[in-house]
Length: 64
Picture 1 (cartoon, rainbow, N blue to C red):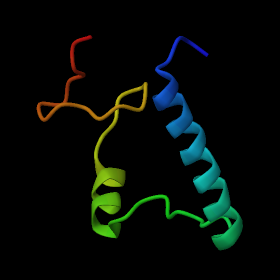
Picture 2 (cartoon, rainbow, N blue to C red):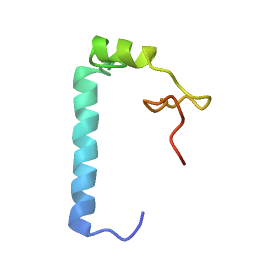
Picture 3 (cartoon, rainbow, N blue to C red):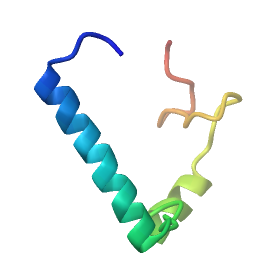
Picture 4 (cartoon, one colour):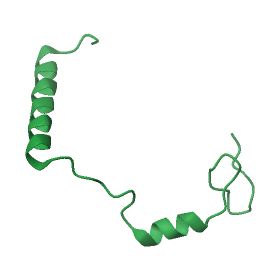
């Protein structure tokens, strides 16, 4: 890796180990694809451009 403060790198390694330990204890928790059903439904209904992004309120694509 890049030059990192040794204390920071040690802490990164500690955190990785803790995360791995937690993963083994609890297993892989499956996350829901979205949190709020109502927001998801609203987003599905919104018009999108050819690239998949939402269109602006006036129906045109946002300038790039």
